[in-house]
Image (tube, rainbow over all chains, first blue to last red; front, side, top):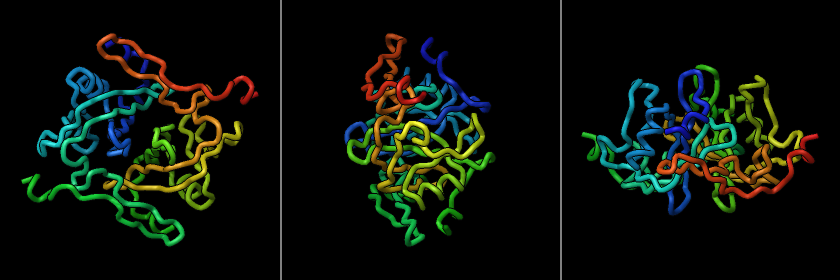
Length: 127
Length: 127
């Protein structure tokens, strides 16, 4: 895809990908994509990422079945970040929450508050 | 702030920050914060970032006046990304658009489509 030539992958070949729920507009997760992951995401319609810890391409939902069907994709002014609008099957977070951002920062009280919704039991999903 | 001790800044001391409009839930921009930028964001109530290109701390809106007033902040499961809900003054993007994500990727046609709304003239704002 020629459109990917204009994007700016960093010194590790990555850009930040924000995954947003196409219906509620909730941010579900932030992960990184290399060119191959973004190309696969756009061509297959299922979100793929580059795992920095495992150093491999990764289909979101490959073990949990909680895939993300792409509805729309946007690129930012600098071409170094994308927003992908998805339909999330199950939950985005490996801890069982719908979104990875299930904790609110409360700076005045200097504590975190769990505000997210748990939608699956990770012990049952990841065996 | 003790809550920041649990966060995971990467090998450059940074984490990804997604800035989301508190009203519309539109993603306005993605940038990077070091610990100091996040601490300033939470203590002053105005979004601060670390500029990777200029290698300095940066108050969003310092030259344009287009500050981002923090309404809420969330951290993800791994502690390596935050979502900050803001009230955006003017536009988030230095090109004059409300959001930096003003272009849609059209993979089948292999082209970008401008879909964002221009809310200011950058030539007048950045003199």
